[in-house]
Length: 150
Ligand SMILES: Nc1ncnc2c1ncn2[C@@H]1O[C@H](COP(=O)(O)OP(=O)(O)OP(=O)(O)O)[C@@H](O)[C@H]1O
Ligand SMILES: [Mg+2]
Image (cartoon, rainbow, N blue to C red; front, side, top):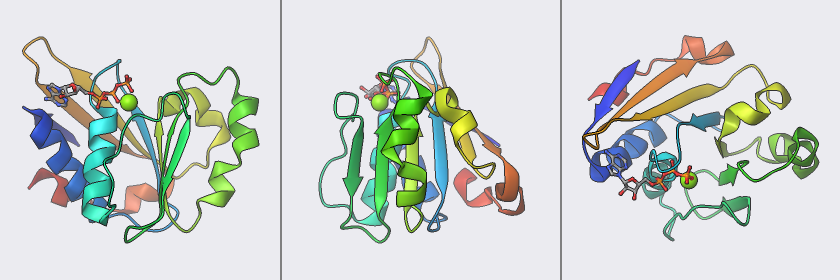
């Protein structure tokens, strides 16, 4: 499934639509170049979950958790982690089973994750638009993404 996103506002709106279909234990892998819009998409998810604060990049803190929304949301950026072992030591996968785990640069730790993930790749184009490609892995294959296109 591919969605064309024209503006930052549309990227957040896409995140809000995605949030509506999320369930406890869901893992989202976000990939795409620096500044592609990964954090903005997570910000839209957080808005729809009713998280009260603005989501910012966790690049320096690595992990931020938002507990006050409809589902707990954990946002992690593995860009600066130096090893998969470091990611495993955070024990995020077991610790976020009752919420949503969103991982920026998630492909770097793909081998440490369960099979069931929603992979999201954001491609930035020269005119500022983005193409967002969703790939359903494992049990995600049984879930519809149709609502995202609306
Ligand atoms: N069509 C668009 N969709 C999303 N973001 C856009 C778009 N056009 C411009 N932008 C801008 O691109 C930037 C995206 O920043 P964001 O922090 O979400 O990227 P990121 O992928 O998380 O980057 P990083 O890899 O550094 O974490 C924002 O400043 C946003 O305003
Ligand atoms: Mg980011």
